[in-house]
Length: 135
Image (cartoon, rainbow, N blue to C red; front, side, top):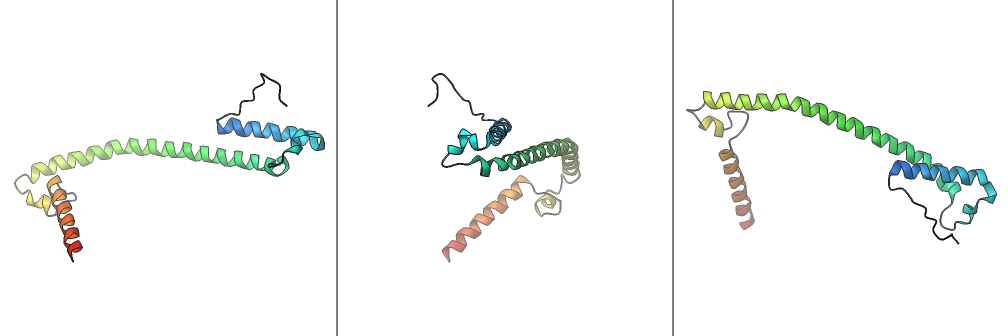
């Protein structure tokens, strides 16, 4: 039976939780046959304990991948600033060059479509689906 007023806090943080599990396993191993944890019915430290290090290694590997991912996204975002700029500048220039021939924009002669062309394609697709449903 536990003493009143004693509270054992199990951490929510994975790193801290695994550190606590490692400490418990080390103490259980040091106590050996005299360990009070040997009376656990559903769980056994002698089978679960060695998995703590593996779990910690996987956690650290995941954290490293997260760091690499965040670094890659920062690098990507830095490059996107320039790429967004050149796309917008190209659009603006081509709008001036082809201002008298908007049909070139809607016929797919240029590498993008206008909002009007995209809307027409969307409506054409919906109409095709409706007609297919009637057959």
